[in-house]
Image (cartoon, rainbow, N blue to C red; front, top):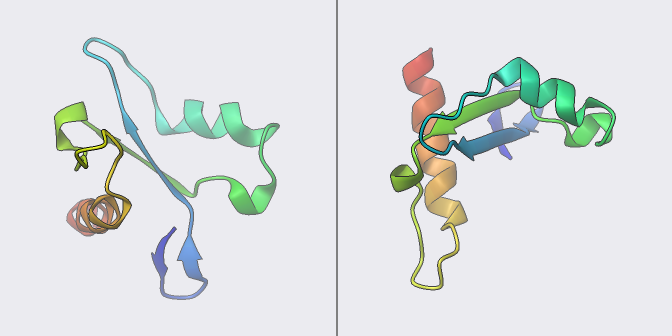
Length: 78
């Protein structure tokens, strides 16, 4: 969940693609359309390289740092 001016928060999905793999935001949204309730579906889909994900020593993504990275990416995209 990322901050949203009007709604308070919005769902954003961050995906790391394997080398050579391709995926689009529309494909992700189409995939989850029948699998998730509308309030759980991502409004935005962001793609990152795996090395960009901030990882903890336990091999888990540091969610607070990932959130900040996603906010920065959205601001850069305009």
